[in-house]
Image (cartoon, rainbow, N blue to C red; front, top):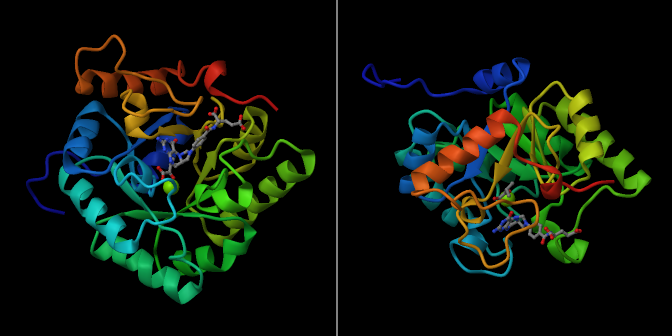
Length: 271
Ligand SMILES: Nc1nc(=O)c2c([nH]1)NC[C@@H]1CN(c3ccc(C(=O)N[C@@H](CCC(=O)O)C(=O)O)cc3)CN21
Ligand SMILES: CC(C)C(=O)C(=O)O
Ligand SMILES: [Mg+2]
């Protein structure tokens, strides 16, 4: 760490500390240095360079065309804009099909991109990959529920875990990934009750997107909170409305997450 860095870089331990104090973790996606700088100033704790960049930045229909080089390019840009927030980057589609390949690509996101942590979409199938990452000192977040890289298998972007069997499987997968060494869980588009159940069982932070208020933190795609997307998902909210600037909108988002006013029931899915 450089001697003149004014603000302390948040670590996983700091995020765990927020959980322990029941202070919600405010998280957003970012894809460039300007977004990163503004989010840092607004007090965002965790910044994700999401493979959603394939859709919101590159204009693809899905996240599937995103490459490792795309991820590294944007992660590097975001890293240059951040001083405080913890930086996490998505492992793109098919970049973690074997343990060796997953380690190689996670190392690239950290060494070339400057990520402090990686995220992968996984069920219990990913236990071997998560175990290996954990053994090699790579902090990892496991993304459960709606996994956009599986959109063609799922048949669309739908709520996951509504049936009892699917809910039980998700709970089992979450616990297996935690035991394998996952440092964080991310739940996308799951009923609030199921998210609350997983959060109650987990000893690692649980971040939600469309997963209700009973999570340790919330994340949204930045374009959705700034009213820039054509069809934002129902769980997102436009925070630019009524604000005079992007900076003020980002601060309003952080405040809403910290105070618990976001997400409201209309941004959540009931069982
Ligand atoms: N702009 C944007 N925001 C996102 O949150 C996002 C992306 N892009 N791209 C990658 C994935 C895809 N995501 C999505 C996309 C659409 C829905 C959606 O339309 N959901 C329905 C609910 C369907 C149901 O009720 O089962 C909705 O009305 O919100 C959800 C998640 C989340 N991610
Ligand atoms: C929506 C978040 C969780 C994500 O994975 C992404 O932006 O790619
Ligand atoms: Mg993603």
